[in-house]
Image (tube, rainbow, N blue to C red; front, top):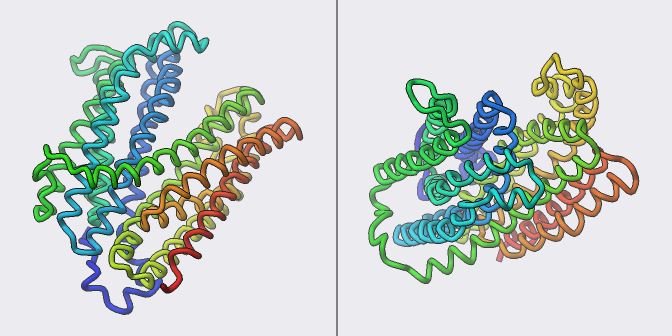
Amino acid sequence: MGRIMPEAQITQSDRTVGGQARVLLGLGLPLVGSQLAQMAIVTTDTVMIGWYDIPSLAALSLSGSVWFIIFVLGAGFAWAVMPLVAAALGRDDEREVRRSTRMGLWLSVFYGLLVTPLFLNMEPIFLLMGQDPEVARLAGIYLVWLGAAMVPALLVNVMRSYLSAVELPHIVLYVTLFGTGLNVVLNYALIFGNWGAPELGIMGAGIASLTGNVISFVLLVFFAVRARPEHELFRNLHKPDWEFFARVFKLGLPIGLTVFAETGLFAASTVMMGWVGTIALAAHGVALQIASLTFMMHLGLSQAITVRAGRAWGRQDRELLKAASQAAMILSLIVAAATVVLFLSMPNFLVGLFVDPGDPQRPAILAVGATLLGMAALFQLVDAGQVMALGMLRGVQDTRVPMVIAVVSYWLIGLPVSYLFGFTLAMEGVGIWLGLTVGLACAAVLMQTRFWTRYTRPV
């Protein structure tokens, strides 16, 4: 895939909505692929541990959720690198590119070292939470290795953000695909004891995750330095740059808290589904997995518009910012419309892909899952609206107010409405998903309004 055309070479026709749509597709499609490949790593871990034994699978689910919630808080610093680098490139300021990326690496290391000790002795905490002793033991073992993987995983995110901002998304895609394949190979060897390797079970999955993240970081650094030597990314890496340290921190902390708020909402909805019953929880998990796969397309487009909006913002070119944002919204709406048709036309088929044909509970899960996918059709529209708004707002480096909007929309509106519809009005699973939709819709409307009224009007 070729390099994206720099602003200096953009013609008037490229500044139109159609022209910007072409640029966004060139940048966004590899980022979509990267998100799907990253999701495949989680999926293969789940499947392969599930083949090993059920206690390990339960431990994976328990410990993976704990690790991810702590990870997304720190990942905000990595995501902040993307708009800062994009804006610096819009101003042709290569020194600022280096300073932003370097301090993103610093903050990621600091955060990772701060939280890693939390993972070293989690078994007693899981036991206090009432978990099965064997599951708690296995989860504690797994988290030791995932904790060690925290710093390299955050550093991988910084390099992904940098490469996306300099519009080299194909490198991100290729390295992520390599990481997916490497994870499968290492899991096969270390979980099951194949090819002469020791049979380590869930510990093997943890070692595979640590190894994969370290190798992925090294590859991303190698290709970044080769592709953009003029940025001299690691020049004076050891020297602090407190001005940009503060800038990345100020931009990144609200991003992390925003993602944390959304992740927490979905975690809470899963807990409430468990109150409804096992069938509802299983169907919820399947429907959420399907919705998450299609959401990756919007997430990739959201990252692409963060880069393009950041470039335009760095140049103070509101006309280009408006055209790029309109193009991003149109592409996202096309994806959402196709998803709605897919979810409404073949819900039983989609849910059935995730349920064993011989499972006696399959008909009940299909019935509930199909209903939830109908809700997911509406859910997709508002979820796309909020993630695209976040992408555009991050591009113009507006993250604090969106964080407040997210917390209010998800926790003060979405979660109570989910409980109200699900239990007070006895709508159960459908009611819980309605509450999710209401919370996401509030966030989408408020964030979209903020962006279009504040940043796209002529000065």
